[in-house]
Every structure is written in structure tokens, then in C-alpha cells.
Image (cartoon, rainbow, N blue to C red; front, side, top):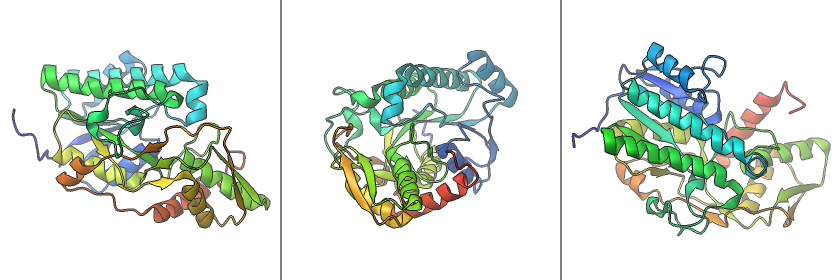
Length: 320
């Protein structure tokens, strides 16, 4: 096989699919420091779930590099409430975009999966080889199945057509541009909003879903964006690489950190009647570290930056 690294980004037209989401915004920020032309398309211009629209857009715009960050995402409650949305929409986005990228000669594609693709009781830290070795976590299996299909489609295009399509599996993300809606947000964003509102109302108790015992790894979204640029240049293989911080924290400790950052001084009360999800989930990032990349944002610093973003992003939306 021809050696495809380093891959030159200089002068390339880079399509960030999903540029209005948290990851997409971070990618645009990071790529702005590179000598590339950033190409984006809003939902009003391009619906990635519609094959004809996707193919017509690719034919008109001819990107040379694609980062597929577009996805239907949400937390435990959203996944449980809308399984069809999470499975069907993500499958359509992935198939349409990856197929069009190959058909219109994209030189490199990076597909972003999720750490929820791994079995519920995978070995810890989770190596890439754990994929498809056991049952998924039921609370997000619909999203996970769709993401597994996307990374396997990239692998299939590599195997059958020699396409330079790669995939990365980020751990739990947080940061500017996060979803602050309690009905569909992930845990870090939800805790930031709940702690802020409890402080503003002068409440003395903050309720946290679950027991607080599950262990999670969190990655600041701008660190992920930096890893993506690194992988575009330095990686070309069919293993979907883990991207994480290498640090894990119990949900109870995360809640305490958030309260410290926000300034909420009340009591934490855990609700064990609510689901915990996977008991532990930390990614084995040795492969990525061996290539020369590590996360650089400590959790407390990242949470402070995320809280500042929450205040700025919700200032004019009191009903959010």
C-alpha cells in the first residue's frame, strides 16, 4: 500500500459537515489556523439525510477533505425517547456523505464516531479491539449502532476501493457550543446548567441523576478538534482510533467540580432511581499517544471555559 502520511492539508478545500454543532464549531476554530479553505453548509442549504441533495452539493463544491462531524446526538433521556431518530437519521447522514465523498473524489475523509460504540462491560481502559465483542449499553444502543455502521462503512471503502477514509472515536465531550437543553443534553452540560440555575434561585440542593458512582472520561472539544487535524495529517489505517484525555472521574466528583466552577455552594443529592448508564468508560489512547498527540486541557480549566461559554450563549435565551 502507498504510504499516505503525512497527508498535506495545505491549500485543500475542507468540508466540515455539522459545523453548527459543538464539534463542528471547534473544528472551524481549529482549521482557521491552518492554510486551508473551510467549506460549510447549513441545514437550509444541505440536508445530509437526503441523498440527492448531498450528491448535488458535492458535485457543485468538490471538497478535497471531509470531516464528518454531523450527527443526531443527545443524552440518555433523548436516546430512550427517540430511538428511530437516533438510528435512522445517523445512518442516512453517514451513508449519504461517505458515499458522495467517494463518488466525487474526496482525497481524505475523517469520520467521528463515539465511545458509546463499545460494549457495556468492555475491559478498562477500552482498547480499539473491544469493538463488537459484547452487548451495547441499552440506554444509547440506537446511536451506537448507527455510529458502528459509519465506521465500518469507512473501513469497507478502504478495503474495497482503497479510499483514504479514517475514523476516530472521541470520549465524552464538553465545551463551547454544547447543548444546554436539559431534555437532550449530556452530563457535563446538564450539570453546568442545573448548578447555575440552582445558584441563581438560591437553592440549597442540587439533584443529580443516578448514584454518582459511574466513572467517565471527559475531553474538551477544542482538544478533539486539534486531534482531528493531527489525524488528517498523520494517520491512515482501518482501525478507528480512540481519542480521549486519559483521565477519568466519578460523576459525583464531576458534579462537585462543576459546582465549584459555577459557585453553587449547596448540597448534592443523588437520585438512584435514575439510570447510571455504563459503570465505567475510559478509552485506551495508547495508539494515538504513540503517534505523538495528547490532550492538553485539564478538566477544571475546561469546565470553567465551558461555563463561560454557557453564560455567553444563553444570555439572550432565558427560556432555554
